[in-house]
Figure (cartoon, helix red, strand yellow):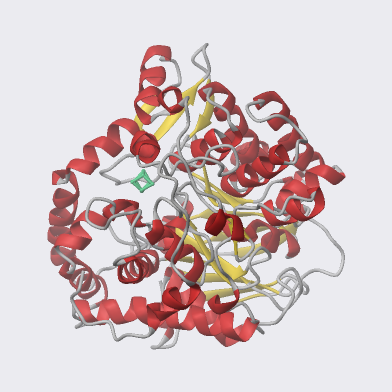
Length: 576
Ligand code: SF4
């Protein structure tokens, strides 16, 4: 991965250059932070010509390390107004890395709106109009391009919502088997891709030379140990059997499951939408249904699933905790088939299930449709795809929906909808939502995993805990490794220094890896400061400080001043 590809979407020019020695050490989220701060005016219009969309595999993207191959998409977010990195599995990230590409940067924007297709192969890079794909839903776009280019290419695309530049739009990606639709969903980066006039990117790595590791033996051996440590962790079996919905029952028991637009933290139909129930339905219906599949080749955890309808035909792949929490309990919907349909509609239209689930919850709170009405919710998502005025409002996210519908009780921080963990009952996540440069984003530092060791309802240790988790997340997102590999990371942080030695020959220690995570966060914070969206201006939504959350009757009581202490310390090496 030693080339950066730049696509000028106004002139159609594509150039590539070799990375400098400094750029060589960047990857994934870290690269996005660095490029954004260096090249994008922080106060620019996120949907204007000076923003850039950066697509980059992590530092380990072209290796055999299990789960490596996640790729990051980044730019200035139309939702938060600050830095945004969103990552996804699927196969395209690995394919970009196999082409030797460290980053693809989409620059400028076309004068006339026209859908374009970018194609990257080992021998050519082309940008061509694709009027036939304009307005097409995601699966149809994938199918058309598959027919044209064969089953093995990787594809990224936006749906109609991205083309309409709606701030709830994400970037969709194919998986290895062409079954799942994965998403770099958060922050409205699909709208940024749409603003560049790029409908889809096809990646064909069939003629790429295999990447050479500095020490292939060391890489193989360390990868094996790493995979074994993951397999030995009890959480892995749970994730494999029940997918990410495995945590739903615990989230409900802890009283942090968003329910009816964050009015309570426990849902009376939680049993009907739990991970156990997802697995049971999949097993009972058979057909296309499958639990324990992967989103990218070589993952030993295999937390994905294919959820079938009663006849066994695939409804959606993969149904995940966040989708069930925001489109399900948050909307008062306790029926898995209804939730699966909403999930699939979001995937096809090209929007973030979390942002849209939060926006529909706000619409339900406003009385536009009743809580629990899955059919009416489906109609709202269809309206997003059709671009009706109401659809465009909801597709712009929870905050805009709240403003237009006169709802002040909006579960969002820094413009972004709160994900599936109510911060009143998981206060560490509250610290992350407020202080992370990403805004309300559970993947930026999720305290759910530490709920046994740090009292989720107390104020104590929440700031330190969030800091540790945020640094860890920044490291994993820069490596291109799945967040679910946290167990070995906690037990054996030295794996990451060894991986970098084996892949690149770098003599680094874990303290260096940790510094990378800290520098990533510092760079992101600097961008946000210059953009005028630094964390001191964004607090918890007022209702979360006033309104007790059942069943624990807890309110969010960490002060903004306390939370702002988060970066006022020196992080010692080896604390993980
Ligand atoms: S653990 Fe799940 S999300 Fe992570 S790489 Fe594996 S299948 Fe994908």
